[in-house]
Amino acid sequence: MSIQSETARTPKLRFPEFSEEWEEKKLGDFNTLMQSGLSRMLSDSDIGIPVIRSNNIQSESLNIEDLKYWYIKDPQGANIEDYFLTENDVLVNFINSLAQIGKSVLYKNILCRNAIFTTNIMRLKFESHVSPEFIFYFFLTKNYKKYIKTITNPAANQASFTTKSFKKLIIHLPTNQEQQKIATFLTSVDTKIKLLTKKQELLKKYKKGLMQKIFNQAIRFKADDGSDFPDWEEKKLDDIINFLSDYTANGSFASLKENVTYFLNLNYAALVRTTDLAKKHFEPQRFTDQKGYEFLKKTSLFGGEIIMANVGSIGKVYRVPIYKHPMTLAPNTYVLKFKLDISENFIFQLMLRNNFKNKLLSMVGSSTLMAINKANLRSIKVEIPSLPEQEKIANFLSSIDNKIEQIVKQLDETKQFKKALLQQMFV
Image 1 (cartoon, rainbow, N blue to C red):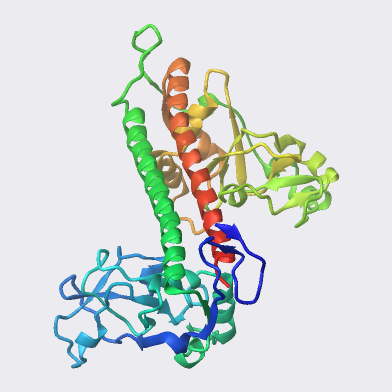
Image 2: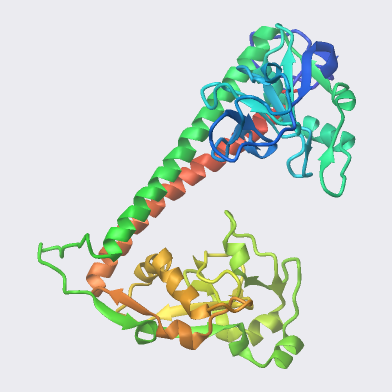
């Protein structure tokens, strides 16, 4: 590829064999069909004709996990033959929530053959010199999304736009050969994203299955000399916890209010919340000044600590990352440290299991406010192996986590690469 000077009808990034200026067109100039689907009663069973609905159009691809069906013969007499989807039809949500409005997919028979579509979806077909794949990728660009915002009527229940306004969408078209080259290249990037996503899912599934066998002791590790480790022992968390604290351990509500000031921008120290840790990249959203940090000294964090939500998202457990600024614990969260004969890496893996989460939830009961107190947390019983076996288990599971993290990094980089391509390969 080569970098081109930016002109009104030339993209920033082009394949070197192309130099022609792109032609400015309105969508209606080369669109041969713009058709909304049928609005009919769906079948209660999975017998009949598969139906693509607006909620099936997700994340640039067709999600067919939740398909609905129509009766083989429409009870209201519609001519269903006119609504069967064909290969490379471009489908667009034009009546939906603001978050979903304008999203599109490229229909492929291999995913769902002989399907029809509902009234909230618009089906597009194009003249022979226009690549549907090229148009689909254009519908992922910022310029397209900006235009959709300008024509959308943000109604209270469902946002929408009209076919009349959609046909006025400006699209710059290169030759069909260049359209195909761009679409093929972006498709190869999508293929890599799908492969990495599948690899990530399989590794997570693999780890989950191994964890179940390891913690059920169906799989046991051996000592370095080949001998068996001792039997696991049932212990209460209270027997192995060395430190359990939370935000309120630093003082009364009145003194906390008086001494701790919250800021939305970086001040002196980050207040670490589970909501921040749940994100792909740790980016604290709450901060306090030096006075607040020193007042909260009992729950200062330095990276590596295990913390869990004690209100709301019960059972969510995280490791605190290393951060370039001081950190302290936010409200509604526990920080846990363990005795010397306990591997915190092992305990962290144990606490990630659904089995552990279910034990926590059983302590909460049917209360509207989901919360677990320290006494209940300390009373939970767990099976603990000897320290050497803990370390072998933790190292083994951490090695799988590292592989997953590497794939996630590759996936993020590939998605960012695609994002940059979409910005630079279209006008």
